[in-house]
Length: 76
Image 1 (cartoon, helix red, strand yellow):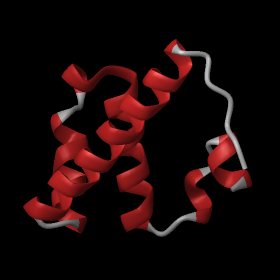
Image 2: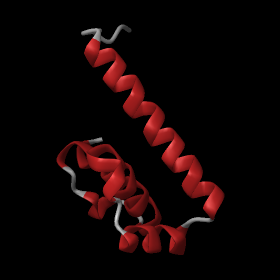
Image 3: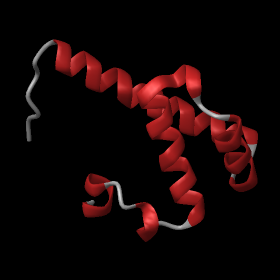
Image 4: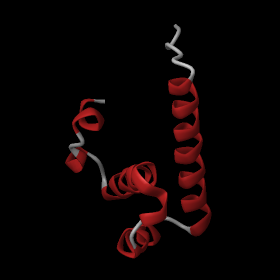
């Protein structure tokens, strides 16, 4: 968790690292995910897996924005 909080991706395997980079790129600006990042994704994942990563990242972005807009606090 600490590595995710600090953005230190060296602790992750290459496959995990590129998935995290893709999720972050989607979060920052989904219209500007680079061709180079897609190339690296395709080296590690099949097309269906890339779609799944994008779907999960997009869904969690939606949940976060929804909760932020309503000023919802996490519950336990």
